[in-house]
Image 1 (cartoon, one colour):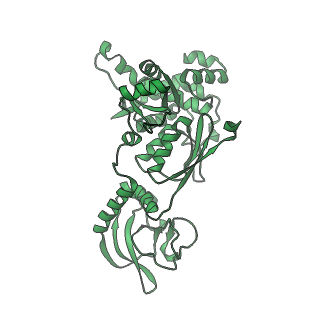
Image 2 (image 1 turned 180 degrees about the vertical axis):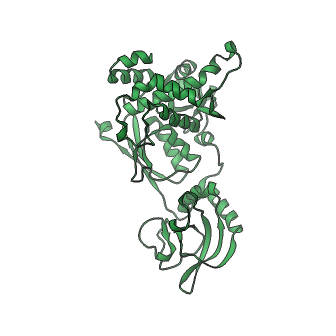
Length: 383
């Protein structure tokens, strides 16, 4: 089939793929969607033929990349890669892009890494945002698209690394009876607590571990101040302590300035400060474990009644989100369903596109971190 598509014009080939996969008519969405479905099928195939060919053998990354280069390279043949950021697209026929989509499918849970570069299909699960919302359901699992359509006997759309079931009222009731629908929290896994409870518990534990730090000067450190603290110098969240006219009191997050620590391994501390002879010194402090630093920053913001916001621009089929900050794990998994379309001045991805069917899932995941979602309906939708 790929050979036949190569003989078509680009527009015809993309239109055919969009029809087969029930995907939006967006070139980048079609590329990512086709590659994601190709990878799922490649990983699933040995397990499909298990009874006829004996014990299945998991598929290696190199084999998947080679097959993607051979069968799907035509999807990228007209792209000038010099205009793309290296983290978004690569130049050797789509194979490095396959590595990126492999990673994303692994984060989603469609495929499972067994170690040594080998992959196996994940089990099929259905995720719903709420029991009383009749919207698209999210499909997780390594089963190919055509097999899912036969299994559920209803419309299934594929966009990016996400696949969605579109049941009508009757089939939705049947789904709720026959399928063990997962909540978004079930799919994400990890923390059973909300952000407020988790932050309070972590802060209490860290304060118990604080040690006296008499006469240790804090002037070379930065302090995390997302709130409007009196004496706060200018804008920003991480600010040098020496710039404050009043030394902040209460527990605060601190870190060494860039010149005093390697950027890739900057420690973070929970500290209590005081003023001593016109200089800021640490009264008590303890190191914050690396795996909770990012989430704790969101917890601090909630504690000081500060709320970040994300703007979602929505049209009929595609949502675009500008997320200019990192999300902690497991919430960061939601980004794997989309594809990057923009970067900031440092080359870091900050704009993503998703299927519009993912919008309620994205809003719920961001809400776990106390992030407000502002939705804009695009002009295309209004027309």
